[in-house]
Length: 237
Image (cartoon, rainbow, N blue to C red):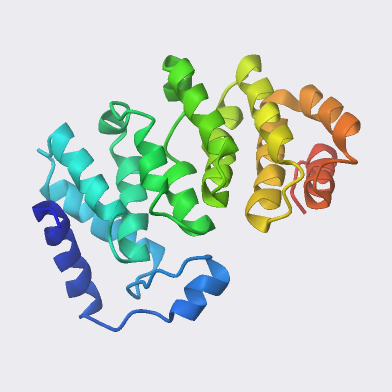
């Protein structure tokens, strides 16, 4: 374990007073992971992350990468989701990361909580489009992987960008990603298909309306239902 990782883990243990890990059964049932977890809420985890970053504001780019590598290899769900928070907060350092690092980190993640903590809130449309050929290659690779967590990541990584950008190439690419996965029946995928389509409505309403009409018989029922409702009411439910 890297030194910075050990320092952070010490802070986590201080906060929880070395309480036992939460039940694995709870995490498996809700989040889809076998990893144990410290008994910390998301707000508590964010407080730990922000305080630690303030005290380590001189963190070098190389140290940041080493810390993330170590956290994603950690034994607990808590460590892996904290890594996602660091990615969210340190945007300047995040922009320097090779996109293919994500594929390696995903090897250690399972379940929607962990995958989304890495992929949902950090990488922006501007970041993807500034290095589009590499990101495109990564996203296709994840989409075709046998690992369902990587398939989910191939869609979740596009949620924020398509919500932010009117770029048509990006939108059409997202629909192609959905097209390759629309027959998957795992909830890890069907719910993500719905999520991505709904997020595209804001910037690509006409495109999504046409796509839904042409593909509603092959798309997951939940995606058709929720996207239609989003188009009609502006809400998921």
